Image (cartoon, rainbow, N blue to C red):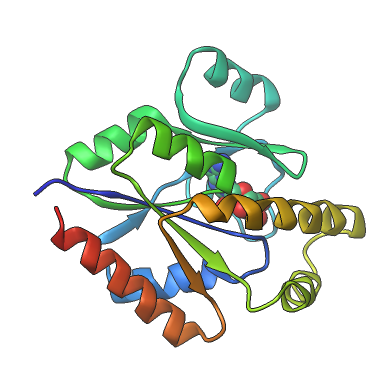
Length: 187
Ligand code: 5GP
């Protein structure tokens, strides 16, 4: 069976990480792609598990050598998905999910039109600001940058295949499962 690439985006603080985590717990055949980033690891994050943490020079080197399926600058840091890694996972028949920003998602769609783009929406902008501040992991400047990014991301989401509103975790996970199962049946 041909494997599809599922790309999930959502604004910072929308809870997409929790939705995806729950989805993966319920659907263990799926794996989450590990991205590269130049941002500093947060407490508890491990290299090679949460991200491959690269220096700016290492990241630039990958860009120059066309190693990325997609990459983007997000809130002052660089993030990217290695092309070879994804091709290898798909060739091995793995069900794979990319959790990346909207710029990257649209790049993936251009290179791989069969990829399915899903956007996780906040119930409202105010709710999202509240969640982002509640995380207590970023300083005010970073939070402001991320809120500006949210507005742009909501516009880009218009080009996605599906939108899932995260108003309730169980409901959002179940909607995500329905979308993914439906798309797999089309393969
Ligand atoms: P965080 O710093 O909170 O882990 O991630 C910030 C943003 O970068 C999130 O929107 C996340 O989805 C996005 N991101 C993570 N990995 C990648 C990637 O490989 N490519 C792109 N374009 N965005 C990514």
